[in-house]
Image: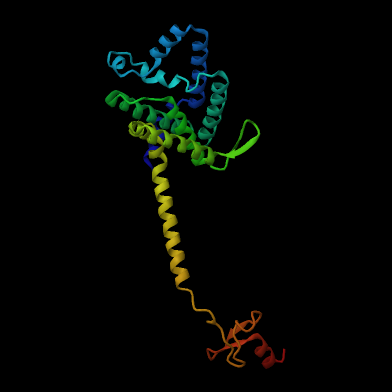
Length: 262
């Protein structure tokens, strides 16, 4: 039994159902709190939630969790759309994986970005969590469609590709973000990397076998059957059927009919 299945059988009962939806709801709650506060109060509130390595080392351990609840966008409309999109992704992932594996995926992300922040002071952007959830969903449901502005249909694999391209462009502009971005997507690489590599290897094997088969094709004009009576082959008449005589020679259906009087 795979390790993850063993873990699920032992600890699956502790999994939190609808975890992605819960995170999205808390992000909306934080957004609401920020909107009703004064600018100074909102800034202090967000600083209270963010993953600050120095404050964590001084005992403010709640920051290890609360930084996930900081919205990636503070525009109400876009935050609502993002939250609904995130909830939809969460339902899809949980239907495919189950609650335990979704929990493990998110916890893996939190561990990776927390270690990066504590050890190297890398940013622990919640946007990376959203992206890893998006990439996971697109890997499981690549042809699922969404409607941009409720009008233009686009498949999830292209949404994920566009998101990955924008992130890559950001890294090209700011190379210092390379390692934070890699760590921020480590859970996705661990979850889908082995399958991607094995699939590419399988496709290479199939291509290799196809190439060997095609290179081994017989030259044009080569026949497999020839009538011992009329000397016709399947190349002369595709409708001919051939039978093997007791002597080992082949005879076509026309000559056999003549011999039998059929």
